[in-house]
Image 1 (cartoon, helix red, strand yellow):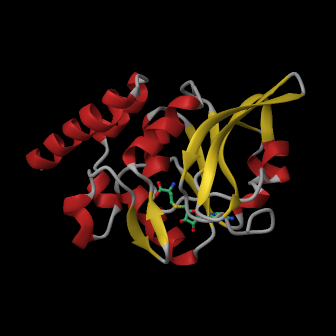
Image 2 (image 1 turned 180 degrees about the vertical axis):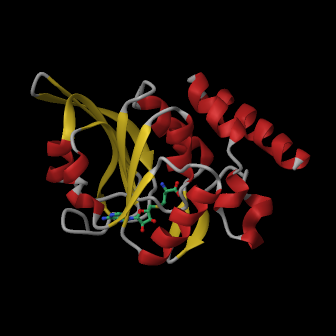
Length: 213
Ligand code: SAH
């Protein structure tokens, strides 16, 4: 366990702080969370390396820096309600929960949904709400959300998600005209007006669904 803690310290220092992650809530969360438990046993030794890893079903757990970047740019405050699309391994959801957010997360692949739901419970993230569904439709019953994080890339911003974003509200979402190559956008809603900031090239798995690929 000591070596894992050291691996995390190194990950935080070399991959996050060195590249401009300054949000102490994000750094503290990623220092604390046992990322190796979010990947398959055979890959645990690589869990703190500087890249994404496969989690089965053609999906990946995002690179640590990307998780940190998305968590930082949404500028969330404890107690805010956040919707994540693409639960995957559950790692990003755990980071958001450690940041004190009220987390709702949606996954479309049944096997990942069931596995991760149990993992989050076993690790004590009992307040994270999980749902098996097409997340491009959002989670209307619990809307609006102060923050929305989409961790898969589609051809555009799904309209239901834009509608379910609170005002004021912020959404981080990778968007790309072709698959597996996107740009990370931060969409802000304020007084009924939308504005966009571009955070540059990223690579996420496909957002598949009604308002996705
Ligand atoms: N946040 C995850 C990243 C997982 S990869 C993590 O921390 O590990 C993205 C995930 O999005 C995959 O599990 C994929 O199945 C899921 N996904 C793709 N399209 C989706 C959709 N329309 N609704 C919900 N989940 C979706």
